[in-house]
Length: 313
Length: 314
Image (cartoon, rainbow over all chains, first blue to last red; front, side, top):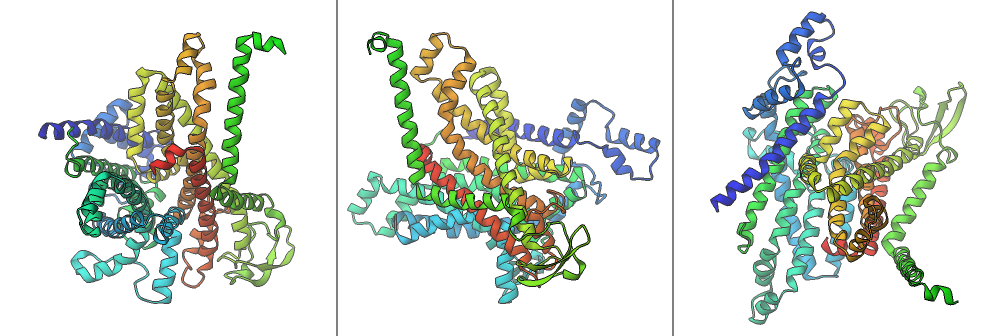
């Protein structure tokens, strides 16, 4: 068990190094001189050369990568060109809104999508099933920001039930925090619900055809128990997998949703950094998001051991 | 007709050819009879016609603006001045934006950009994916390193790659298409690679190899034709996501320059005044959603008819 854990952790390392290399090359091969950008318009050639030396930009690309990678490992993501602070500090300040938004979204998505998927599979071909399939195609097609404005218009402007924009810190109380997060997380969860519900339906549909379901029904178990204990638990592996893969979708959605709802999180930071061509910040945010994505999918892999005891790596 | 019968090779080619023609015909008629393909296809044809006929649909030049016709509600009449200084009476079907530009014209012309971006994103991603997939499937020593790089690309959320690349290159039609296509390449590569690995074990490939057929010919004649159906399906879904991502980039202000009429740019323009003039976002939003929906429905239909194995999986 421990040996497996160790091996699995070890196998994600190459992926992370390649991600780091890609992110490094992507921004290092940028046209334009970072030293000149940092120095500003009024700088002399000497000043620029000094900054270039300070940043290590006069060394070879492999050397630069080694130095940069070492710093990254120790948590030093460099200085933001635009905010003039450590990227690590910057990310730390913006972490809470994004984590809050992501967690509420995942919670809503799982609580809505899994029961819907199970019910659709249970009444295969019925109105709920057809409705869900139609909804999932629609959910994949409506752009997050169009949906966001539709909801703001209907719920906030016309009905006046929820705030249009903004974010309240958790420290200001759970009530206001949740109040500001409801609309953004509903917006963001739609595409995620479409994805999870679709896979839940397909996966439960498959297990419902198994012999042990017939046995469970034959021995007189209540239908609810058959569905939840026998069908759903055995259908869990693909569902958990798609929740993990969907995190990539969620991160893309966070960038857009935070911009529409004016939430000062990492997604907003990404867009602001791109608009300001603040490369160290872009680099840091992409690295962090990718790291989280890889780690979540590692956790998903490990959870197979729990949901399917037959799996022994 | 004695000669063909006495020549066994001629007979062989004849029968194989007629069988494949038959299979193609049935696949094509299955595709045509599929409801999803029909609905998605019809909507797309209408959109393509709209894009082609944009100048003759009561539109004005989408970059024209008139300070006297700012922030008009949908359906209002107003005036617009052409580049020649001529002032025209014009009905603003979808209202106007804060520069006094006609939203309807911008949305109709925006159809062109979206369709072009969708199509070319799919083509670029497929082209690179096919080449890399064939390389990975055939050159075993390159397979490991290449697929690790692909794993790395897939570990970075697609939209972040696109945003970062556009930020580096500055937005133009070409860079936006390539930036959106790059994160899609690994999926195509994986698909082609897995198809290559399974097809190259088929007896007919083995036969071709033993007859001394060169590798490139095996790829072109045996491997690629068998990849067409899954690639068409994959390409459709890439097209849908390409249209979506382009709109997102433009909306965030990191895509095509704001003077180019795209749905994302029209919506970005409408953000500031959303409270009073929500139609600036809703009209392009509806076009965007309907277009992506049509492409997705078409893709679903194609998957069900062309690629039944894939249909079962999802």
